[in-house]
Amino acid sequence: MSKLFSSVKVGPYEFSHRVVLAPLTRMRAEGGAVPGRLMAEYYAQRTSPGALLISEATIAAANGNGYLGAPGLFDDSQIAGWRLVTDAVHAKGGRIFLQLYHAGRQSNAEVQPAGSQPVGPSAIAHGGVAYTQSGWVPNTPNRALEIDEIAQLVESFRSAAQRGVAAGFDGVELHAANGYLFDQFLQDGSNKRTDIYGGSFENRARFLLEATRAVISVWGSNKVAVRLGPSGTWGDMSDSDPVGLFSYVAAELNKLDLAYLHLIEPRILGNVEDDTKDQNPVAAQLMRKHYKGVIIAAGGFKGDSAEAILNAGDADLVAFGRDFIANPDLPERLLNKLPLNRYDRPTFFGGTEVGYTDYPFYSDAAVAA
Image (cartoon, rainbow, N blue to C red):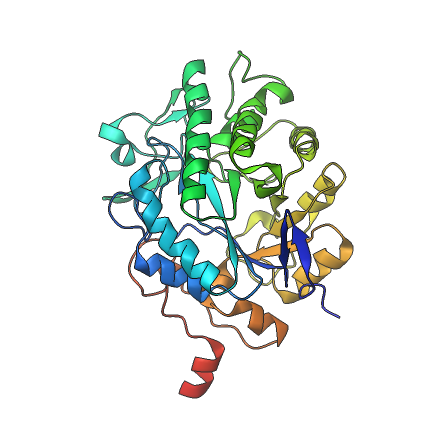
């Protein structure tokens, strides 16, 4: 019997299967970082009864963006657009968590308010690119945040979480992976601070834990989650002791009775283009020792590898990205072992309905054939 298609409880919710829509930056928001009907259609297509979806990374503060076309919830004007999305998901029997993020140093002045300088824990030269009106461009060198600005950012996450309630979401996930601001504070390759937000594991995790508790004050702990990437190196990320650091963070998050911990699994050789290699569940295996609640694993899974990590007990649900982009009916295809549409990588980021809402459902493709 398939573990992937057995029911599971996450926080106060019961889900009928364990196939999760991963948070996927698609950059299709309209002016003012407001979701429109195209985004609502995209999420509705990927909703099945009893399913869990996680929204794309959503900007929590006005200076938090790194990608033109990313949606936000840093302003009340963005609530109604997200309500289109959540209503569409709920109409099809699914639930959706809001992923909140701040790009930190992974940004360019072109997408900052009034062309201001991006911020981070420390002013350290690094690589990486942002997406602007000029296309993909190098990140603008960042400045280090002052302590009072960190407190303001914690409040920004609280406010964005409150807007998430008004927008009809079912919970909130904080994005602390992929080289964005929380991750930049966690890892000592990017955090060289000597105050209470730098140095020890406790200090470097302080910002993430403060923001998590702020969001919990709005939602309650069992509707709040955190995403980590313990092996992530994108954006010039590194740490001198990643095992020690992320074991500490997982243990601290374990104390908060969260809805789930979302972990990005490392790929063999770190090759994001390689779809043929088996996935190595090192991250979840390690975190399971320190985090006893629900774990969602993500990272290039196929049906068989998803079943394997669930049966091993290292994860409770599996989030799918690229295959969910190309297959709006992915759970049905995995359940019935149906062939998958191939994804079109050039249309992943930004654009129109092409490569977004025009992928066929299996039933439609069969009729067309």
